[in-house]
Image (tube, rainbow, N blue to C red; front, side, top):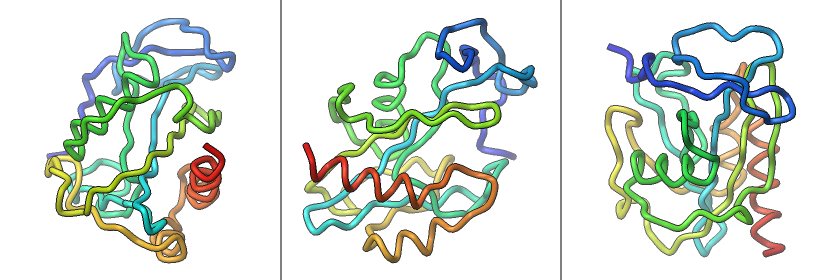
Amino acid sequence: MPADRLLEKWQIYNRQLQCIGTRRREETLAPGEYHLVVNAFIFNAAGQVLLQQRSPDKLYFPSYWDSSVGGSVQAGENIETAMHREMLEEIGWQVPVKAADNYLIAPHSHWISAWFAFQTTRTADQFTIQHAELQRVAFFTRAEAHAHLQQIGFDPYTLALDRAWGHLQHK
């Protein structure tokens, strides 16, 4: 059984990020309609990045390594609220999310990604993972993370990873 919630509701946006309606996840979007997605990279003091390995039950890219946290913005949420919810749901991390944590908004064919960057003093075993969504989390050097994030059909994760690190260095 897939771990994805196909009946969850999304707000639908145009390319200018103006809300133009609501759809269930399972419904197809028309050309010019987008749903919002949030992703984060979380770094430790040594500059290593936390990655999650997706559940084998995920509909798309099962068992692939992915960003630290990510998911869809649900109807009624903004990107900061969604990022906070996703971090709490997926890895049990309760941390304030501010607009300044967002370093990139990137449009794609039918979704718009909002990328966030965070730092933590936690070790990987101090996160409480949601097994319906992911198998495990681990910290990797940026070079190791680049190797794990070489996947098809997705955002350019390695570029987003490098930009996240740069964003944190300039905070």
